[in-house]
Image 1: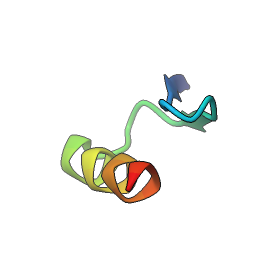
Image 2 (image 1 turned 120 degrees about the vertical axis):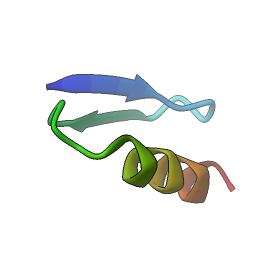
Image 3 (image 1 turned 120 degrees about the horizontal axis):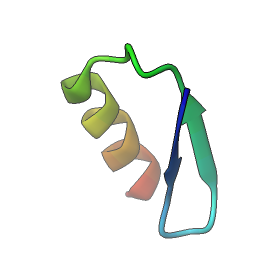
Length: 32
């Protein structure tokens, strides 16, 4: 598992097997 801390203070937990491109798109959508 890995954790991504967003600017808004939320912590996103996901498996390390998540595709990087999908992760980037998902984080970008949350940050918007």
